[in-house]
Every structure is written in C-alpha cells, then in structure tokens.
Length: 529
Ligand SMILES: Nc1nc2c(c(=O)[nH]1)N[C@H]1C(S)=C(S)[C@@H](COP(=O)(O)O)O[C@H]1N2
Ligand SMILES: [Mo]
Image 1: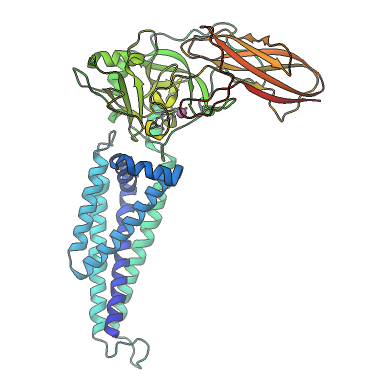
Image 2: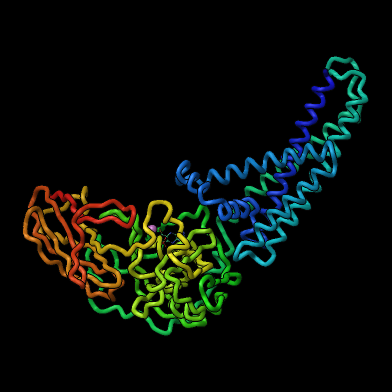
C-alpha cells in the first residue's frame, strides 16, 4: 500500500519535471524569438494556426459563445493543453525513457511547422523551436534521471514511512531529493522569469516597430492638392485629416500582427490567367501616388467616431489586378490578412478607372502604423472597412460572391456594403453647456465617391438652414460644415442632415448598424446658459 503511495508521489514529481521542462521549452523559444526571429513564439504561432484551420462552424460557435473573448479563450485552452502535454511528457520520460524527450521533439517539429509556414516569418524563425526543443529535451532527461536516482535511494531505505525511524536519512537520499528539487526549482524559476521578461519586452519593443521607424518610402509621384478653405477654424471641430494617433481602430486581431516588409509577399490568385506574387520593394517600385480618402466603419452609430480621414500613399489595386488578368466570370476579390481576416470587394469597384481603390503603404506622411495594417493594407473609397480595408494584407483571391464569403458575411453583415452618406455634429457637445451669444455649430459630412452637396441644420422646430461647407479636397474625403448660431438661454435641439451631389438626402429613419450600416439624422440636446 505504501508502495502505491510512493509510486503516485513519484508520478506527480515526474509530472512536475515535465511541467518545468515545458516551461523551459517555451521560455527558450521566447528568448530566441526576441533575439533573432520575431513572430516565432510557439504558442502564438500555433494559436494563429488553429484559427486558420478551425472549421467555420466551430469558429461561429466560439464567437457565439465567447464573443470578443474567443481568442483569449483559445490561448487559454492552448496553454492548458501545453501544461497537460508537458506533464505527460515528464511521466513518460520517467517511466519509459526516451518517450518524454521524443514528445518534446514532436512538439518542437509541430510548432516549428506552424511558425515557418506563416507568411512573413523571419528568416531564422526555425531557430526558436529548434533551440527550445534542445533545451526542453535536456531538462526533461536530467530531471527524469535525478528522479530515478532518488527513487532508487528511497528504495534502499530500511522503512518506507518517512520520519518514523530513528535512523538518519542516508546521504544519497538527501542528495537525490535535493538534486531533483533543486534542479527543478532552478530550471522552473529561470524559465518563468526569462519567458515572461522576453514576452513582455517582445510585445513592448517589436523589432518590426524599429524596422518601420527606419523605413524610408520614395517620394510620391503626385500629391493631393488641398484647396484653400478646405479646413475651417472652429474649436472642437474634427481636423480635415485625423492624426494617426486619434484614428479609430477596428479589427479582430488579438495581438497586432508584426510583419517585416522584407519578408512580406502579396499573392494574387484564384480566377486569374496569371498567378502573381510580389514583394514590398516591387510594390512600391510600381510608383506611389497620394490619395485623400475618408474611411468609415459599418459599426459607426449616428454621431459616432468610427470614421476618419487620411492622406494615403499607395498603388491602385487595378494596376496589380491587371498583371494577374482576372477571368470574365469573376465578380469579387477576397482580400486576406495575415491574421486570417477576409473582406469581399466587388471586382468591378477595384478595376474601375473612376474609383481610387489602393494598396496603401503610408498614412498621413508616415509608413502605416502597425495597428493600421503595416506594411500594406487596402483602402477603397465608398465601401465600409469590413468589405474593403483589409489590414496586414497578404492575398487577393479573384473569385465570385457565390463561391466565397468573407469574415463578416456569415456573422450577420452584408457581403456588399457601400458607405451610407452621413453627417455628424462635432461641436457643441451635448452635456457641455455653452454661453448665450454667437455659437458655432460645426461638424463633418461624408458621401465617398459622390461628394457632399449641402448640409442643413435645424434648431428646435425652426427652418432648415444651409451650413457653410469647407472646400472639398475631393469626393472621397469628408467636408466640414459650419452654422453660426445666435444662441438664447435654455435647452435646444440641433439636428443635421446632408445631401450628396447626386441629390440624394441622408436617410432620416433610424436603422441599426447590422447588416449594412446605420442611418438616421443626428439630433443633439444643447444647454445654453
Ligand atoms: N486584418 C484586418 N483588417 C481589417 C479588419 C480586421 O478585423 N482585420 N477590420 C476592418 C474594419 S471592420 C474596418 S472599419 C477597418 C478599420 O481600419 P482602421 O483600424 O485602420 O481604422 O479595417 C478593416 N480591416
Ligand atoms: Mo468596420
């Protein structure tokens, strides 16, 4: 009976040995990844791999069940799987060497495959799983051996029950126990410290961030001409161009993908006569031009902030598609991000000479910020971001709406979604009282690809009065509008509506954001003192 208890005790110590070896494996990979091969973190690589290969129904189930926590749950389950597998490897190495070491070799090979097959993997990415495997194997072999030594020395003790005998423990017992626990403790603690430190430093100072900083893009062949009067001087009004730091961010990425432009490849495939693959240098060598485009999210509520304007440097998508020669029966381009996100854009919008659909590499005078899609993203005037603005772009697949669907399509959003013309009040804000007298009421209005013709403002039940508009940069960029209001004390309602250059007025009726964008005139309550 004591024998069985002893046996169990050693099995749990063997699992501990496995856990420590697993920690050493992961920590080594993190440290090597930090030094020489970004993106080579086994857990994150395997996690991304799982997201890529998991069948759609499972993904839908995960989204429905865990909502926005789906990726955190995935990482937690992976961590749990790693813990269990490590413990089993420890027991195997103790009972049936070298099976435990072999398990580490298999784990190294699998995570290595997940790492090196990811687009944009660093050249020496394989070094992380390789050295991690070596470290994990060495530690599990040493710990299992120490444990067996200890077992043997325990076996020679006169009685199996500890502490009951008058005889002092034999030196080898002490050595065996200390040897195992000390080695396990040292390995475990250093793995924890090194692993956590490496991951933290890696997240904080990604080397792709410094590559981006050092990146010098060629001057564009053409720049946007901003006309006089394009920007009104009103406190509280959104600037014509949204600073990158203030630009809204919407995506499904758990960690911001870090892609080294040197390893970036864009594949154009699907229903094309010629499969095309190009790198970053080839892309920018096609010639950069500057475009002024206002981006809008389908999730933007009336009066919301999920809209912003920027000057982008890029290459027309049509120039790239021309190289691939799309087939005539295709009607959609499925753009894919390195993180698996996809968007479905009508092929005709991308090939149309009149639409400035671009692959953008710069935003407001600097390379794309990492969180806005570095090194290359798509920007298409007039289409909501989820059907056009793929960040961290890696692939354009020419296909049909019938054959393929994008990330949000099975999740309650339309496969096609033009931006709805809209207007927003920036100032005054409800809840921020103003003093009586002349008060500027100002905001922005957008109708990408068409342009804004007029904006009207109504105070309480008064007549709709026409606002002064800023001079439009182009039809793809929002305009600012302004009404000088002689405010009288009390509370007042301010409403706004826009009309585009085709004579279409903003829809009055309120609708929710799903499936293809909100509508409604914004009305704000202003207190005048
Ligand atoms: N890779 C990737 N690209 C993406 C998304 C995403 O989730 N993943 N979201 C899209 C959506 S819904 C919008 S509105 C825009 C937002 O771009 P921004 O974050 O640069 O403002 O990016 C689009 N591109
Ligand atoms: Mo969006």
